[in-house]
Image (tube, rainbow, N blue to C red):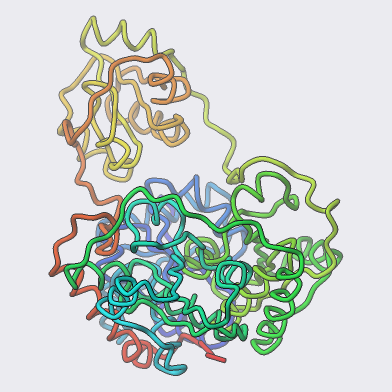
Length: 527
């Protein structure tokens, strides 16, 4: 294994202050990452590094610094990144502990830059909000109120405020006047916790919407803590916007983007930047996934605007890179860009696009390395082998997918913990690897071969092919060979979180402004 050189806390801090490009990558799973990490660390777990890194760190000579917390993952990540063609890879000196000992601030939870920024916005702009009890009283009184839910539609469907309509964050300025045409109608924006409510409310205020606007204070968490009932499985969504309202919203959004000093760019500028080897350029389409699939720019990634502002670290993992945003209405890109500029990014909106530019169709496909060779078997063959015995099935999907449904007898395994996992799986004469599609499982084939010395096969098209063949399935935590640390359990997700966890989450968010000040590297500017 090659010996990696190191970068220090002081070097990374200075690069952040100088707005230089860098990727600080935590290669642990998401749950330990959420227990503590630097503000601008991007979580790209070793388990799926090959499948995520090309999209998230597009330029191969970006200065990349990886770290773990003593688990030995960082050294493996360095080797893998070198194999993937990355030229400037270092290990953080002393790992996470070294960061802490050098005086670096550690943040808990996920998507922290955006959440901390949301708290900063509220503290500086005094974004109006209403408590859950106040909103309930308005609804009970049949007041002239519309509730707009700024989360993703799937989150809204899980649980929502009574009467709430799904209007994901970047859509708010484009759709609000259509949903509340009377300027006397009160608009209430909610999310699960605080950030997207604050950003959504402030977006409408910044854009000059005449209606009184307020955030639902503490979102569905605050609603639940107040003992009030949520709805489940709702499907109320925004309707198409008239051309007149779109034009008006575009003027508003452009004015806000100009205030935030968003850059203007042409398609020719984009083409030049995409050939520029000295800078990383991300191209993000901030419309809905359905609009993206119907037609988008070549090489654009689908990142609905509200989620891009909320999860910027997940999509653009190179701090200091250049972001280019695209829409076809002049509203969503400008509003999203206005927030990203305040978050310290160099961001541009493409202004001269025509329908002909949106020439690609279909869902976004992540760039991945050429697939490794593996001997594949069909679901039918696997069923025969399982009936004969002495075949172990290892499932590399997410633990949530595994618990939802899996091949009977399959073991759930974290790829980054293969040696420990295999010690828990009874030895077999042969191994069959799967995941949802087989893409991640394929990467593990040579690793399982090396560790077991046995024949290893790949299930063709993964568990999806088993399901398509209408084979029997199991659910639940039946055979966990690894701990379920691949995903952090968010206190604001789902409907069965302990009240103590919800309250602790809110208390943590309230403390983020002070933590930002202690960290001192954020570069945020609230307009």
